[in-house]
Image (cartoon, rainbow, N blue to C red; front, side, top):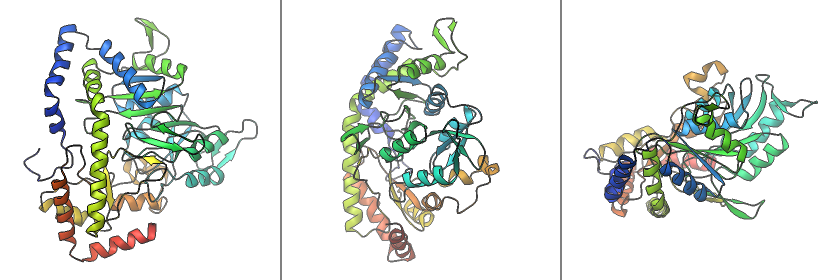
Length: 412
């Protein structure tokens, strides 16, 4: 744990200390075999992660951004097209869209879950697009580009409401690629299918990130694509390795986006502990819920949708005077985070798109108010109690508390 914080936002060192001997064993195996690219460790991890996600295929790649880009590419999304996503996400989501030559188009988020609002998606398709009579495909009125795909983002460890999104995708002939980079093992109850579905199993394909701070994190950059589509999986396997179907046989022009064997070995080892870590995160979330509710803390608590089994990559509350509250907590030695302070439609790379403040008000309010509290499997009840006590002590009946409650009442 960092000596700078009484309670850090994330503590990666604790889990690594617990697994140190096994992790050293991964390095020794790689040294002994000298198989640093591909090989059994990559194959084993791909098999095991596919099983976790209840899909046929997993394609390991070098990062979550690569995973989303290759999935879009392999699904046929390309230059001159538009892809719908949300403005409340990390820029990697829209970078991947841009990198295949497409343009991101935004719809607003649900106020309770911070994920894509299916009704806003419907409104966009019905009001901001037109159907082409000959093909039935939709075209953006704003850009004149065909709209070919939608990327719902499973944010903070909770899945988007996939049933209505998939229904709209079927109606408008859209490809669905899940951004599951924060949702390893999360589940969604499909009312349509009357069963629980895993993140990464519902779209044409999905992208996962294994950045070190994720619930399942590598020792550097790593990612994966999951899918049940045999052709898409085969295409992704080639794309990640210079377009090769076998050595020096190049079917397409590809990329160098392979998953390193050592990273795959680390991930495979951690994967065996992911279920336990997920339950520990859920226990932490339940304890936060109880403490914050009982203390009448100056925040709006995260909402778990009835169709959701989240994995709490982050525990995100909302406070009307977020920045001041964050500074006060830092004084008490409590590290917090903000995910994400600038909605993408207002960020500099997309300023030429012609968006303005007020275009996506729910995402804009979230960007101004969300606050990530410390969350990791080894977080102790005592540390959580310190977080909540510091938060409540700092409110002291002030305007932070009153304005937060007002914000909650307006969006409840």
